[in-house]
Length: 158
Image (cartoon, rainbow, N blue to C red; front, side, top):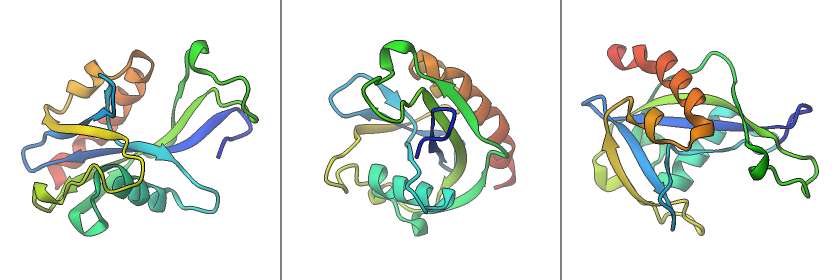
């Protein structure tokens, strides 16, 4: 879904382990790493979209994670002009995301990056909490920093 301003409604997922590290995944066939994320379908709640994206991108089910919380409001980023697909209607100029903080409560064997027809990721690793905000593609860095900053206190409560 794209809102009236041209932002695609989306969820982002920060998955943590007991050590406070976060799940970091490499996009298939690229040297591009990111958190799991994805669009919200029509008539789908934000939380339902989060669990669907989690399952599609990591193979994890609800029972494998504990929801610690989410951002209070939408966090937005604009796509650089070269990434905007002008031949699509409506035109998407960026993402508008609610970010979730999850804690892994299952064994790592629960991960299955090939659990859907078209996998998004081909490799994953646990990394230090702030590392993704330094490594993600440049136009997502501010949103990653905002999400990580807002959700960091939830790790101490878990």
